[in-house]
Length: 250
Image (cartoon, rainbow, N blue to C red; front, side, top):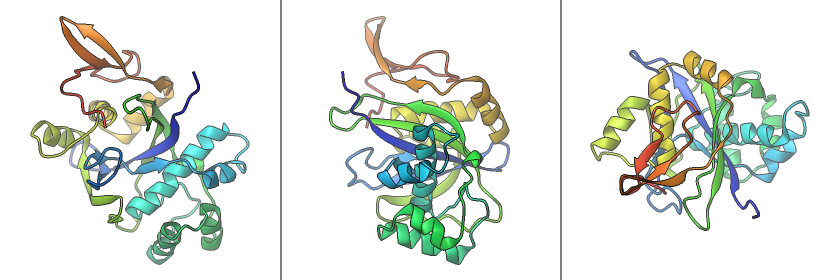
């Protein structure tokens, strides 16, 4: 069967918090076709411009390079945060880059105009999810890890695709979801549980080095007369099954 999944990328940003690390989250607008109103990490589709830039990184797999570039680009657009460059752009430069991207300027031209170069090694590949949850919209998403620089400009919501932006620990978002305060979809929940278990950037990078980010395709399983949505048990996730009636699938 032909793979019709849409390549995408997302970026899990880390900054120091009280005890556990905090991550940057956005709340998707309620009008979005996918994951409407959900709390997610910044990210989006890999586009043709990302693939063109990836040609300048022949040492990397082209799909991996394009996904890293997409994660960097989408994080600028959605949150006004720049990672993965040879130097940190100042607030004014970053604001210009963000505006150019929103206006439709090709990312390669945006980077060149700012006088910057990409450093894709600043991102660590953590996971790859391809949930077959919607018949017409199936994303193959690579999750990357990166540090948030203390000298970086303050993050801000784009107010288009997303309506809110905030920093929080993985566990606090899980707690809010359990209390019905926020909505998180199945892949986000599983990754939050894994991040909460790890607690820090260094621990997450260390685990990523020993657990290959093979594609995770959730599957259904019947257990004790009830149907569960499941993932493989050897990918570092502390929870690998959830009742289908409780799983948020899109």
